[in-house]
Image 1 (tube, one colour):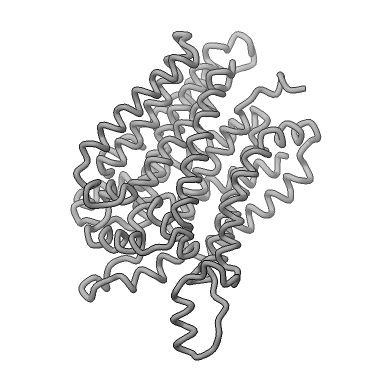
Image 2: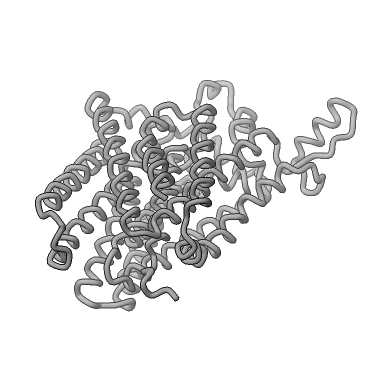
Length: 434
């Protein structure tokens, strides 16, 4: 398992490079690394760990396979629910065409491959994280990766302080900001871990206090980098999404320390939902735009308008995974030809490409996973910071999906998958398993 852990840690630390050179070649390298890691993992994992991992992974695997199956169905030339574009193509060439739901089958196959790669990283992280020592390696590799990305955001913010005033951010910039947001939660969880290890140091006489202090300082520095980067670069919507994640983290800590239990957590959750309803009610953009675009503060108004027109016309079954770039030019005006071909938010892209039912299925799955991890963080004695961080990150993921398109990038997806896998891998203590 040491080799599987090492490759995973290297891959996570490689995510800042992936962010800078995101493209087909990098996608292929990440997919190859994930495939190699899964092969090594399958050969090295011990029987006891396998049984424990499967008890966690089976429900998640059933849910994760549904979007993948839908992507496969979209690219098959079934003729059923085929996009009207195939009828137009048939009339143009004068030959019968058995159309598919997707308007770009090649892009759909590529999107399926990327999705399977990210899911592989998530399950790989969960399997490696079954052991608490290996879980710490994943946690601190995530800390290093997000801190490095946060430094990049900070450097960009200092050199281009008006980047948001230009109206639109690149996907690379959106990814970096989202990773910095997740870095705040990861750094906070790592800080909690260090403090807990310090409190229980008497149970482990070999534990070095000096090392714990150095780790604590490193966590605080990483936290400061990510917080500063976000304050200087992020929109108010990103700050609110991050604030919700941090609030979830703090709520678990308070509930655990004061012994309020699940009812206390439910009350705090209800308060959070109430605040969210107030924010939605006071958002004037909801009267003119879909909720999938109303919080897109980091895109040009014309980009949002194009996406709204596509959403209005998109069939319920979607236009096919990865097809936004192919369909967007049809909806652009002449003066909009130079705009980036990119959906303003992840939620809008999923609704257009996979269809609204799959979007809300993904949202519901994220909420269910979030509730499961929050509950696990209350039930665990030690190492509760892993599911706690995972639940907080899932909350931030879900909200960021309605704010920008950062989660569509490879680097952000890798970090999100690793955090989620880590949280599920440590959602239960192995000592209680039979």
